[in-house]
Image (cartoon, rainbow, N blue to C red; front, side):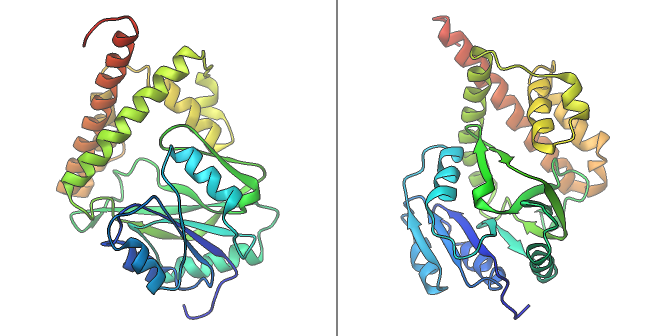
Length: 281
């Protein structure tokens, strides 16, 4: 797609010199690309400048704080923003759908878009947990909550675009995936403990029937945290209930890794709870 789309782009980075070139190439439909960098020590900033992107550097705190700061402080040229991570690629068809959405939003202030995750060169058609993400939005109508895997809180109607973007979560290798999810599991455990200490309420009914996806996801997470043998349940959900076995070896690998990640959260949550009681794990 050679035509420019009247939409700004926001890319979050931290040492992304491997994936960033491909990401920025796929975003060439925009004339206002912003790279929000968390003090990279590699060539990330240099690469961003070489593509004509505007770079803002700020130390990372938590995902929600980081993203909310971006919504409030980065001077976007256009009223609509597309958010991308460096390991993601916007397809040409999706660029056309983005153009269509911002030209005729129909009262919507944000849009969900389908995501395709890849592992071992294969699209995880069945195993992926959540195939839709809010990536196109008006920053004045968007904020984020939670320490990790933040929930989008949108002030207005949310629509859906056609097309999809491609996600390569293992582009840096399995070792990097483990390092990242070791950090993520620590934050998830802290979020669970904070919710319990603060008496956060949840509803089984809202987990099943709440019309708003983000509110429903919040309640689903709270219900999920209370399921016995949660790691095994997650493997069964992804591999059997969602037909992940149809994705072959890649599907099994992904389901097993997600189950292990869940077990890390369980153990770390227990560690925090015991620590609060003065007991060693």
